[in-house]
Length: 415
Image 1: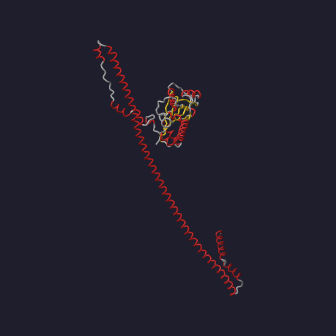
Image 2: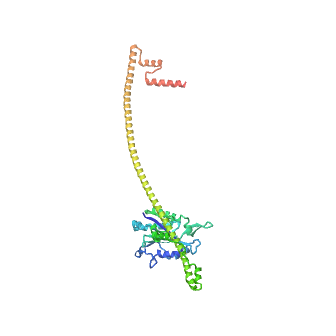
Image 3: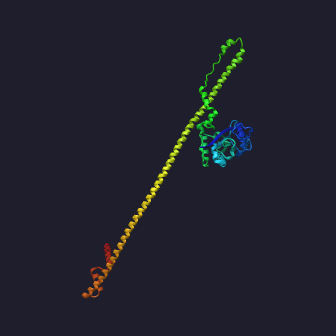
């Protein structure tokens, strides 16, 4: 996997022109053997400086009303290097490589509200190892003076304020290029590795680590035996004081100086060895974390697959169960509907039959009354029916009789 790499270097006025000579390829004979002069014409600027870095800075100071107390050793510029490994650039191709560095440029323009006007130069090198961009900018912070007035001032200390300032830079840079579609991993923390630009193996080769460790284990720091000048002087006092002053004393001083140098060398070698030991330690921890992350990713994928499988099974079960319930409901609905329709048909038949019986009853009663009147000479049937209704307070018509009884009940309730 390739990494998103960004480095920062703080520079004084005395240091920036040397960077310009390298970045603008102004040296006739390059000491850097990695530079392929036949490819230098492929280099290009995202923002080009017209003058040397010091003259560009002086022009910049004259144009902008910036605050800040600058001394000869003050940090006046920073150089950022944006890159990744060769495999990454080979994979994305020339067009995407250009877009990558364009996004790096946009990133630093917006980082901490720096602003494009504070960028002095940005050049992409394609003639030296993996493609990379050198970006020079003035570390300007937007703040307020004692009176509360907003000002801009040059202050690298405030721009990179906080022990985790480079960690925040790495996080912001990685998130930016990742959001733009570049498949990169975040670079290792500088605070954790205690290294500048190299891998552990590269740093071992540069510092001759294995040999250094061997020397540190074998070196002896005891002060070598030095001839006692007092004893020698007893024998040489009367013979040759020139030997004492010009040979023995200078040799004694040289031995002491070499001893001091040996101590300094041992101290420096110890530092280098400690850097490598710490780097190896964090490399192992990083490898362990990456392995754990890989396991976690695999576990997450397994859980996702299990969830999808169970979800699919649940959807299948739900769909089938829903179909079964719908079918069962339809069957019950059909059965109930059938029963009710059957019952209605039966009731309709019974109702028709009752209507026929009632009609036949009316007809028979009418015939019976007419027969009674004729048989016993009672006159008209209508008069007989009228007398019956008045004397019995009843009606031969059932509907009238029911209505009459209902009215009587209502009257009783009113009373």
